Length: 121
Image (cartoon, rainbow, N blue to C red; front, side):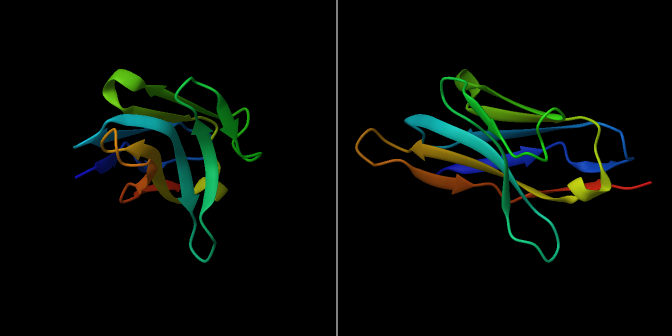
């Protein structure tokens, strides 16, 4: 069974920084793309940043220049460094991983349980 476990959320003042981590564990053959999404109250879930297994990155316009996504393939872990946080960054952040649990099962998306990030003074 595959699990994605996020950590690092919390409360931070505007202009501050937070770092999120997400580790995939369990029966894993290979992890492909990984990413972070977020969902604010009353809004749809949106992509924040994604990173390929080879390290290519993609950011939402709202995250460019402030957030940095990275990964450690050996640890099946993805990170999100968030700087210059704004109140509008407040949301539940979800980790996503596209992975194969075995070498004969096609890859599919897995999700973490979500972690709260609140930006407020």
